[in-house]
Length: 230
Length: 230
DNA sequence: TTGCATTTCAAACACTTGTATGAAACTATC
DNA sequence: GATAGTTTCATACAAGTGTTTGAAATGCAA
Image 1 (spheres, chains in turn brown, yellow, blue, red):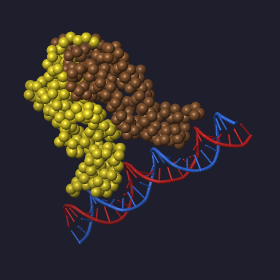
Image 2 (cartoon, chains in turn blue, orange, brown, green):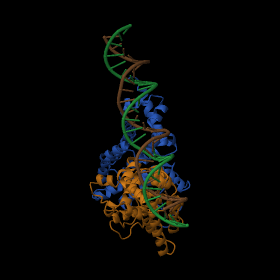
Image 3 (cartoon, chains in turn purple, brown, red, green):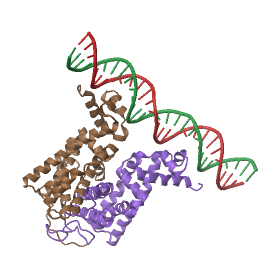
Image 4 (tube, chains in turn red, purple, brown, yellow):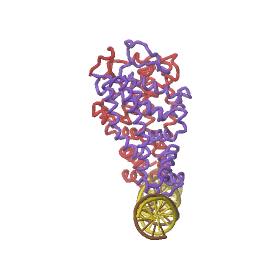
């Protein structure tokens, strides 16, 4: 197996280039030039371009999913098999948001690659994403335990909206910064996570226990409607 | 100007093919074959492939934006220059959701094209979307009038989340149907619109006046917001 | 009908793409 | 050091891409 040098050089170069310039703009020739390896090496080590992309995505994706499930498990164990809904939503959106946002992650190739994978939608990645359903069902199960008696459709919608906010924030962080002229701080990951979790919980519970002590509440937290500031 | 026959045949064929098979899979040769015109006609009438795509997208996009602004204007006039936040969010997400979802729209090429444009992200379309900021600012202005005194960042986040839910629902309607095993009815557009609006308003107001009489409330609707823990 | 501009057409152009080939260079085992 | 297996390499391949060309057809006014 030699030293895997070529193989990992290709993976690293590909991830970097795809992250920076997108899938549509990067050819195998760009990748092998960046990696200082021969063109044929890609097909030798990965079989095809699509399998290379798939391997890149699967690697990062598995890591995130593992993190999610770990947080979910921890929360359920802490609650004796029934986690508070806030913790479940946090386990769902936290890893992704933390992984892709934040100033420390600016330079992370992995993060930028996953953002790219979220924006563009290339066939090999789409195929993998479609198999992610099982993973999400585990969250539905946890939500069912946390909010017993609730209609299943409500849970699905809640999960769906949570993912919507999380993914859309990652995908459109550039545009939101521009639109808000910097007033939305996309670097304050903790605040963003709290915000997404808060709204997700509100969506599920109808506005009741949405608030926990946290960085920046969505609006007037405990008070009456019109009194808000900051 | 002859009869525009060729030009519009190309537009129609292109929209249909892109809608069905995506931008990545459709070549100019596919389009001209479908339209029964000569290959060179595309460059003659549109200049380039990208300009053809841009024209397709701009046409549909302008229509939606016009609809949005009409609804917004109507709501503000009805309220004497200050529309209720529910109406504003409805004007924001209603046209898009109604345009892309629903059983009657299954066969609509325009709808399927816009869904495709939302899923794939091809350069000419991305360029246009980036100019959409001005349009969104009008909604921010209306929101500012509706919720005076509120921090601007909160308004931006609210708008952002509303678009997140709306777009993600369109983009992932297939997957949500599959995940929920049909329990989420993606054909009941009215209910979906109400749902998105309700959550958007909750996100902006912290969960208080989120409910108006409507199809399917998210969960426990009118519950006075209670102090919560964790 | 003549003349001129617009539109269509078949064909070719220029280039890029991912992939395959087969020989050469390695590496490790005996 | 010979051998077998792996890895690298330059090169070619085959196919597909958007675009251009220049002539032919068409439409329309004078």
